[in-house]
Length: 258
Ligand SMILES: Cc1cc2nc3c(=O)[nH]c(=O)nc-3n(C[C@H](O)[C@H](O)[C@H](O)COP(=O)(O)O)c2cc1C
Image 1 (cartoon, protein in one colour):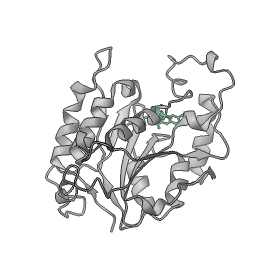
Image 2 (cartoon, rainbow, N blue to C red):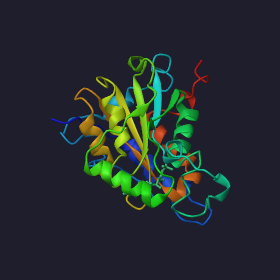
Image 3 (tube, helix red, strand yellow):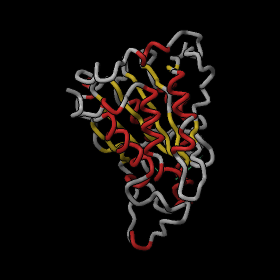
Image 4 (cartoon, rainbow, N blue to C red):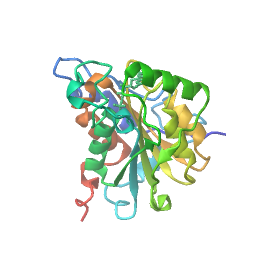
């Protein structure tokens, strides 16, 4: 039996309110993707178990003194080398994310602003090409081979973290394979994992299922958020409302808890 995704009506409502908050300068409404796992707004997971109490128990500020949070993310910009940054046309849709901060990194920083915690960038030993087509090709090969690209660095004392926010771009309808390397490198038993995704027109696609499959039964997966690439720069309110829905209200930021 797979783990259920904890869904809160409040979280769903927060997300549905995000369209207006996430409007871009061009007037486009932010496309906030909810997980395809969303089956009900009544707080049942896919196995029909009640889960609505799980995050509701997280009274604002209550767990904050003990809850230790890691925000781990993979982003193309941290996994490539650009020889001449000044030559990158940041307006081009395909090259927008090769220069730091990458889209996923921006979301990660906003999450940290709200919930505190430690940031960790997932970086492969072998950088990806900064050429979009070449990066696409390698990512496709890695997906086809179910590869686990080697990573540089490790999270120190992963056992201290209760909650891991896990960020990634949608690559080929799922997570980049280094995200699976990351998930398999640590014991996530008993931890809460909260996915967040920057994506193109494909939304979250199969990414949450891939994460779920890589986690042990005892890990708890909370409702993910996805932000459409052109809306990332305007998405801080969207992230805040998503976090509100998960029980991480504004008062949960580190340093604001009495
Ligand atoms: C190798 C590669 C594969 C991608 N595949 C998809 C995809 O299948 N669906 C989608 O919606 N977006 C896809 N994208 C677009 C990224 O998800 C999107 O640009 C994201 O915002 C990049 O985030 P980042 O700057 O953190 O890397 C792909 C991008 C790359 C580089």
